[in-house]
Image (tube, rainbow, N blue to C red; front, side, top):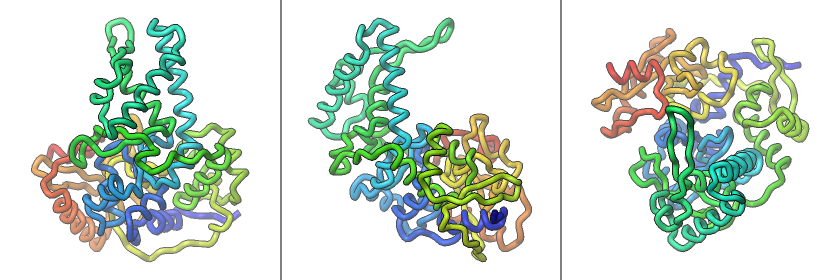
Length: 390
């Protein structure tokens, strides 16, 4: 069994995540990483900047909202991703459909338990038909606009018990379900590029056709192949965590793809594509300021080989990554924006003078790239909070 050590894993990361050598287009970067995280709307722009620096914010907006060569969708682990329409179909079949099935069961149960409908499934189907009809008639609509056109969406569901209770309209539930089922996608935001409030539109209208229907087994195998091409070697725990799959689905996908086992430095067993066993070396020296929830930072469950002991400082208690500073395949620090817009960072490991100079240069460039726009990560981490307040 071939051993792939930490040094080679870091070299693979730099090359395949477009950090040692940038991508020529944002579409190549998104496809190469299987998707850019989008739960925090600013992460997409910052992730693209790190990998395709020639692409401006307007250029990314064109790809998302004009050319539609990229699409924002609910994907692995019920997380938002920006990916290509081709990969969207595989993600939908391999991951998102299961999320939709669970959400449908949950909504039907709530409707029936709270006495809103004797037949929750029939009630939900009727609300969905009206919602889709409104979207096809009026085009892109925000949730508040939809609720004015579809009375059923104003129905309230109760949550909590005892001292804590809350009511939430059906709009959120219905659009989440429709997005998980692949019927609608997030279109343009209601505000600027830092806004996380999107308009909704039918998938077939936005992309020109519905997402193709693909067998779950076929889609799972293709998605695993794409992930291994970018993130391999990965362990069983890495694959299951990233995809959100069961052991059964993971094993079936591994059997359907031509993979080989490799030994990792920590004694664990990893998987690579059979054609990807050749050693990969890179002498490129690089640094990168990556945003919170970046696809690279969140790419593996077992992160010691690139994160070291910095998890408590750079991740929140729920496992969400904050902004990180990378050098040559490992995380060496974190960063934040101060109130005046300047980017501040702290190195958590020793680096040589050349690396420190590159970090400072990229800090200056990133401050200029923000252009005075102040952003705050959706998930705050200990170091980010400290630096932002300094």
